[in-house]
Image (cartoon, rainbow, N blue to C red; front, side, top):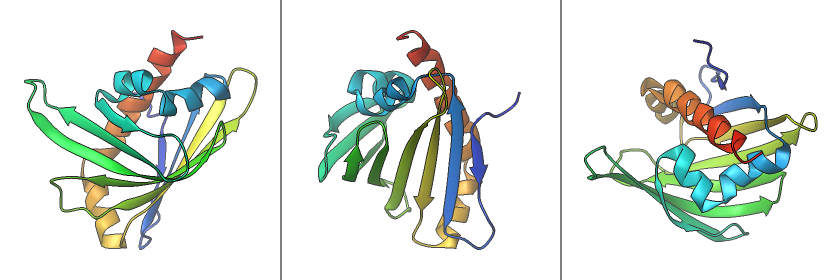
Length: 155
């Protein structure tokens, strides 16, 4: 099965660029990242906090299938421009990984299609390489596929 979410990870760099085109209008794609009820559905996580504003905080909690807490992820939103971009930090509790910086850019392609570009910067190339050894590409593809499916129902 083709992976629609593309991950560009240049050797020796401490960053990755993730791109995905969605069959969704720009406003709905952006809404999928800022509406707690929608985020919970496609990410399979509980939104504890999501303050969509400059200096706003966010916190998500993910549990395993038995209901046990798997991890908590949190960060600060540094820039928030509706339907254009979100700049935020991302940190996951109970992992050896440092906080990362994420630049999310939303682009209208046509009336019914849009594109997400995520530029993620890690502390070092070594940390980035560790993250890429996880089932990262498969996971983000699955999440983006769910996003497309769930938000399609909102059209």
